[in-house]
Image (cartoon, rainbow, N blue to C red):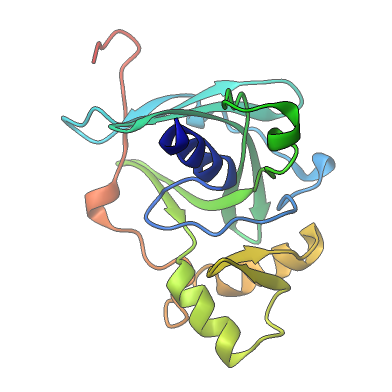
Length: 196
């Protein structure tokens, strides 16, 4: 039972996508959201049981499902642009975790931000590299408002400041906050009639 609670709390805070950095605040305001119908569908790597699925939701948002060998996670997805780059803000939803209301009041959902690179050959979803962010914040503590919580960085800046930070470092491969896309992580869109 304790391991289920720990696992649920972990998923409440973040998505595992080659590393993640949670934020208390969203990356975009409601009026900055965009919708790209090309993202709708199921995406996976060939011969992998893991997948991402995007469905249209209200107000230019997405219902996002991520499944891997450890289970299923559901998120509210919010897409937006910073400069010429597209980002997906994920926020956990439908967390059916054990415990009473007093316990649940202590859990805080976190936003995570993925850079979205949609190419003819497929889709890349790239998360922030927490080690690179830690290194950057040690060198420049004023780069973005953040706190360390149990050895983990949590972004605390408002949306406008987050956008400035992400825009500055998204393609800065020396800082490696997002890094370069990795061909091994290319996702392919599944055909509507294919069965996994």
